[in-house]
Image (cartoon, rainbow, N blue to C red):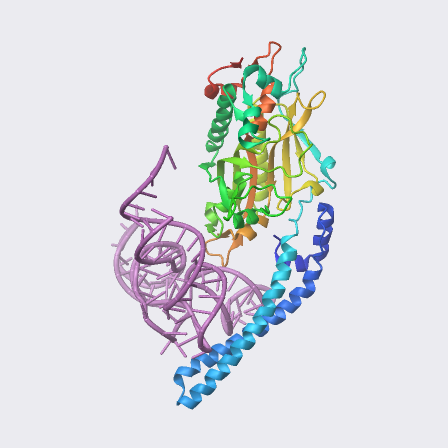
Length: 424
RNA sequence: GGAGCGGUGGCUGAGUGGUCGAAAGCGCCGGAUUGCUAAUUCGGUGAUGGGGUCAAACCUAUCCGCAGGUUCAAAUCCUGUCCGCUCCGCCA
């Protein structure tokens, strides 16, 4: 959510930003609405003040007659104030509806355009593999080593669910262990998180749990929703809180399951583990001061690179174009791993994503910071980034590390947890 | 799931209809003082919106979990709701 004053003072920039984000909206209506809102606000406040003054006179009234006159006057003033207040509230509601549809502003370095206009920033340390045999995709590798059971997943939970089996379980746990111990070692507080969250928390983070397009599973007759990412619960952890500025940045790494309906994704590359309704993820989350967030965003991206370098997976880093950014993001970097089994001869596939959401989520969630000696509070900045989504990481590992005999090398970083150097 | 109790300022905790944004203590900030990393003492110390100012000061409205209701007037009475605690039941 943008700040109302910011919007009013920077209307042209906001309109331009909406256009480059591809968001249909009319923020200009807010200007006139806010002017009349202020008018009603002042009127309501003035009437309220008069009513308060009248109320204070009542206990001091000389006699019953005077008291009755004052009570009647108070009654009228309150009624008038309620009417003005109601008008103010109605206008305020209209303004909020418009503003809540607006995306965050955009970092000046973000490329213009849509999905295909992302800027390629860099590549990982690991080169794309060159096979002297026909490489398999991860589904075929899984069949060979009995790693997944998609059929049973469909029987039990429907299409898009799966069981991991055997070494896939070890790999899954190893990825979690590796990511968490790596991050705990560089200042992140490890947490396990609820897998369900209240609707208003989702909305604060920028998810909309209702409507036909929603990516969110909701529990009927409750305010609970299955989280699509621990970003929701980690950000929600500090909702309504005021953090001592000296404690910033606050770094968390959270382990959670992630649930996504994938509404509207039917037909898109959906084979195997790539697009599923449930997966496990270690997520990084940072609450920072406004000055710290750009540097923190680079740090989260660099940590993702270190993790995938350690997993010996080839990847590229892209700076997502404006039109492809979600509403809360000010800038977003993705790591796309090379997946030799995708398409005819391999494709890049997104494995991580890190966003700087500046104060967009903090304003909705009301997360502030307080600096000692300074008057008032500031909204913090929030950032999130994938450390490891185990499903997609496994795709990249299995497909890149397969060998001619069908076995798969386990990256050194994972061997302590997998307990072996080769699968199969 | 059943029964009971409770949610007040950074914290502890008073406060059952008007003078309460709210006692007291702690913490914190500033001053004084004592010959010394402490003690004593005085004062100050919430947030948000609106106005005001170069910036302050200042003025004003709102906020005692949240949302409604009663009343001229609500932290205080009523209803709903969320959260927490205790006991019982169930349970990994």
